Image (cartoon, rainbow, N blue to C red; front, side):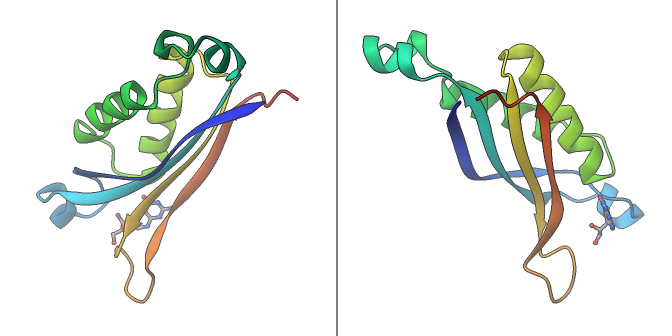
Length: 119
Ligand SMILES: Nc1nc2c(c(=O)[nH]1)N=C([C@H](O)[C@@H](O)CO)CN2
């Protein structure tokens, strides 16, 4: 399996369990690895034949900017669900972090894998 990735995507959104967090925008940071087969696109050299990371990034940004969830777990699951459905991605690994959310830590968050990773 090949991978198309997006690293260090930063998006401003509302997220968090505390009242003060519901009235501010915070930055979340996303790393995304998506299973794919690049051979058709490598052969044709046409964007139509690949998983377009720009299109994926725009969709992820739109979803995250509109987030109403409190937990990073819930937001991560929403992103993964959307990607598996809308882009027919067989497998993905998603890191969703909140930089600076915990004093003393650079970032906290979750890493999830969804779908089936084929050889
Ligand atoms: N596992 C999680 N733990 C915590 C979360 C979360 O989304 N998942 N959220 C918070 C607060 O919103 C925190 O980020 C505010 O500093 C605490 N723990």
